[in-house]
Length: 163
Image 1 (tube, rainbow, N blue to C red):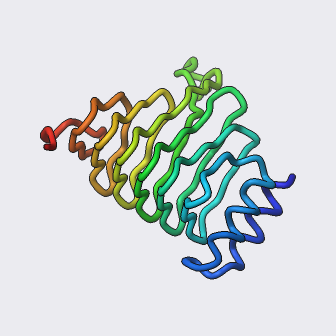
Image 2: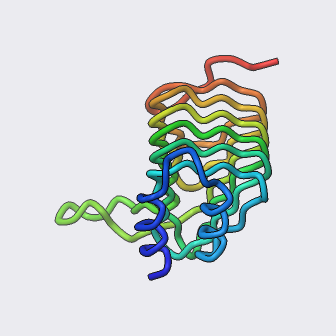
């Protein structure tokens, strides 16, 4: 319930100001975040699951976290998350023909230090994105990404190694 109230309050704050107040509110809702995280407005945090955000990270407007009790979401240090990025740890197994969305599942998401996640990307459960990676805008990341890689596409695939 507290996260619903938090989402309501965050909607009314200016999108790129009052970061200290926003951090204070997020901590009251159980989010683990460093003292210098910049969480812009317009984002949402759904569910009661664990969310941690590392030092120096920037979360652009409209970032959405669908947290789950059985699958933590962890954002590393110095990460830049573009506008409209969604983190979705939950999903479903494929069910029988009368209802294809079968049994629910949840797997953690881990974003390594120094990553840049481009606008409107989707990061699905069970994914670990290594340190220093770039995820191109609009990508859907469905599997692990090694350190220092540029990935793009739906589903995201490695385009090249970064220096």
